[in-house]
Length: 475
Ligand code: NAP
Image (cartoon, rainbow, N blue to C red; front, side, top):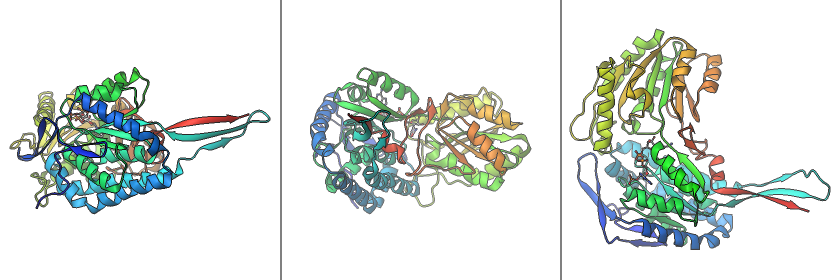
């Protein structure tokens, strides 16, 4: 059956347009071509920015109830097309269909949330220090927003940015990852149906990430750049945006620790470990990268985790029951292979897996007693590999967890309520999962500290990123 949401056209100023050149989108599960999309460049970006800029005043001045109604209609259409969107996602990213379906719900929940939340972009009244003054603040949309998103959540990383931007009265130009542009364009098809006026939302695809990124971060008409991706690229975009002092939101890489204390509920910890590690084959920014396990529970945890990992079903995400799909590309696969080889060379013990399978698939792997100087201790592996490190005291565990320049998510398992508070407060991370391996939703603030980023997405704070706080002093 033809998927009605697959398009080979970019979306600029309310029109769907093919490019002079097109590039193919490849299914990582089998190397087949799914479709093609326009290979646009910096000049096309500039045009889209001009259109978004021209569309801004009318959209900004549209009453919030009317704006929210269009955003809400987008939410309705996304949920109505859940199956079709999920299939596109699995085809272009390789993630199991069940995960893609969950991502549609997750991504749609941001659209629903911000359609409502925009109505509550409250200002405040401030008691004046002098007689005859009245002080108030109001929130106003920043203007044209540019957004650059990664392939690992082809839908949700877009809605987390675009929904609050549009709901608060900004216009947006989105450049999705080259691996997963079809989901982004499918969202554009639904946005168009929802009734956004031309130019309010634009999606430009192209291979020239550097050139397009430069335009999106240096063009004076853009007032805000929101990026999700690696720390290296985030750093570059921030430098580029500095020239015109744009507002910047960065959701970057992580190196999430997952501490298991001696007093943990071990079965709950195993469930949390599988959820926190193997979603999207370990290719999420909040994926557990380091399992830090206390001495007294280490062997039992390693044994149970290995047994659970051995049961995971690897394969094409469209097949029933598959839990672990392929890695996104050859570069991703090489990194996983290198991390495993390095850990083994440095003395880690292989408990299961350890090898690449056919094409871009890698065996779910458990490594025990990984030495602290292994690459996997310092860098995101972005693959289905559990690296277990051993610690003795709570202080040592916390010190190990914080021994990274990243600070996105951290998780730990303990049944001692005092320890739960102590460790939660001591972990250097923007988000902490206490006795859970999954923590993200639309109502809570998502984001990192240290080199994992700037700003928060979702929650009431997510709207602040797309508005300016203006202070009015009435004499
Ligand atoms: P990436 O290389 O930084 O790519 C992310 C996006 O940036 C893609 O659209 C990419 O385009 C684009 N890009 C690449 N180089 C660019 C440049 N020089 N200028 C402008 N744009 C550029 O990251 P990735 O490896 O694909 O994605 C995984 C990373 O994202 C991981 O580090 C992960 O932790 C992070 N991530 C963070 C969050 C979060 O919320 N904190 C969520 C998801 C992922 P192309 O596709 O064309 O290369």
